[in-house]
Amino acid sequence: MPRLIAPTQEDAVIDLDALVDWCESAAFDPRDADGLAAAAPMLQALGRNRSFLADLAIAELKTRCAGQRRHNPYSAQVMLLRPPTGRYVLRAAFWPAQNDHVVRMSGTAPFIYHVPHDHGFDFLTVGYLGPGYGSDYYAYDGDVAGAEGEAVALHFVERSYLSEGRTLLYRANRDIHAQLPPASLSVSLNILASAPDQGWRRQYRFDIDNSAIAECMTVASAQLLLELAVGCGSGNAMDLAQDFARHHPADAMRRTAFDAVGMAATDDAARLAHWEWGVRSDSALVRHGAEAALRRVRNGPDSPCLSAVGTVE
Image 1 (cartoon, rainbow, N blue to C red):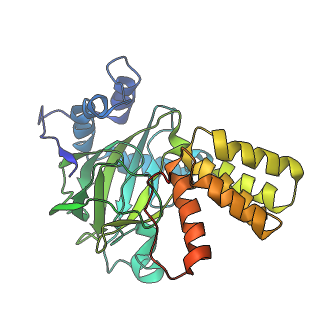
Image 2 (spheres, helix red, strand yellow):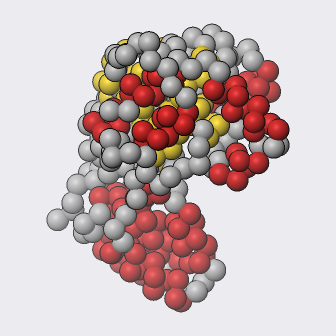
């Protein structure tokens, strides 16, 4: 369950510039959850400013959203409050109701409603407008390899709503929620921690019924580039993929490289040797992929998995 942070200085109201100035000061260190939590009183004070977000939206509309188009990597659901700094992100997120036009036209998938997921970063959020989205909250210890189908010890915590002023600190790869549409359009304000290795941090969708990871929801662009290079048949790409499968610091890239080498193997014997090497890898994700591949070869595609992500001796 995300950490609930009670309001302090309940009469304090600040503008966006004051929050930015504080975040740029030595008082703010978003590198861990406690440092991020220290920003809660400032974010709450901004949340009591009932005009700043409308003023910012009007200013963006007057420039045909030039600032958002230049700096915003998110979907139209998100409005950046300031360009990202590399240490943190300030944003507002819009949560339409089930019967709002945008949901009736596009469905709930773009808003990840009813999809149990965690986050690859810590973030602080406060309900700014409306009754707030609901969440069925679950928790897990985050100690996972991250493989599809991997068993995870989940436990249900509660269902609650991000009402106006309610402030929560979500912990990276610890807190899971399945979000529910609010009763009416709602808005939340967020401060997201942004680490140097953020591009490699993983976010997962969960299969609650089977207490397992359903899939990884994030892919780094470098993974796609490697798959493309290997798929084009470049010898240099194959050499790089073999090196990445053994030595890359990110498990996700090691697994991508391992799979790419296996797919590009020219004969069954080479592919089998590659998979047998994989079960001895020090990467849990590579071991999982190798075991699954060997299972399909030896027992057929419908047989149960081998020993999850444990090392094969």
